[in-house]
Image 1 (cartoon, rainbow, N blue to C red):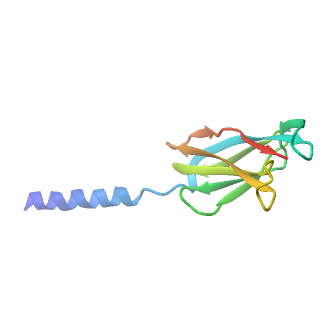
Image 2 (cartoon, rainbow, N blue to C red):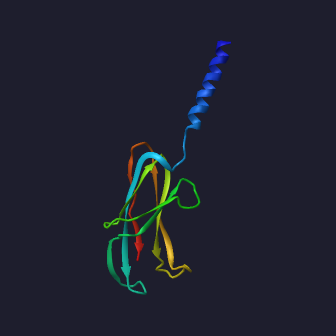
Length: 133
């Protein structure tokens, strides 16, 4: 009888701990930081005219396997951004860039990087997102 009681107790603990696993998103203690770097070209993209860390650019974050972005941030004067209070999990960061191949109907393409937070209180620095302005 005692052994049966321990099985129920072990099963209950297993369910309790696995149910507490939360998906990527807000509500945690970690941060993702990064920068956006822009290049400017002439109208046919044959001559580089300027390059700099881009201020006031929109950068978006997708939590886990979501199909749409979850939050956005406008970069600071030095092209930097940060998303705070995130839980462990995988994230996709992206920004829009001019399409230098002239194949996109909108004239824009997505430039993205992926990052993963693996522990609490972690600061993850994402790869630089390179765009064309």
